[in-house]
Length: 238
Image (tube, rainbow, N blue to C red; front, top):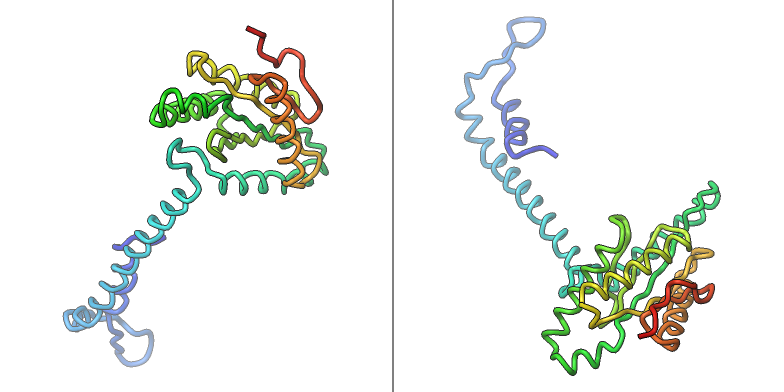
């Protein structure tokens, strides 16, 4: 990408000089008519510079709008649209990885805050919003830098991992513990985990959602996977 000064130089300097022949042979160049030529060239050059600056500003505006369209306004996490794209893109690469015997899979972790409506009713919606932000930060801290962390509903979050099932369960349990810690045990999350067997987006979401439902129905503050409950990833009974 040329800078504005480079554009000016590239467009004006060749036009300021004029060929002056001295008999036969190579032409020599003269700048005797430079002032007049400069007056003729500068308006067009200024237009090119302004166009370059406008294009650069427009690109920044478009990039910012795209970022906002994919970001949850309250928590700063990716929103539902960003989650859909993230999951689809990662699943598209799963076939190629398996062809090259890459053991790393794609795992979806769904986390839902337990009894959040009651928390909102008891403490008020501003407090509920602050709690959502704390939970979002707990998820980010529990996950790795390359993991996709998204808020996909009121109190529901989704994490897309490039990880095998066993590693994903450990990350899910870290999420559960971090959420409890960051809210002084006032809020907990139930979690459903599913590792992709193929590149079917809807099938993976359905598996994780059913696992989440089982975690809710079996006492909350626990983790269930599409392979069944996992010992040691269930919160102790109080």
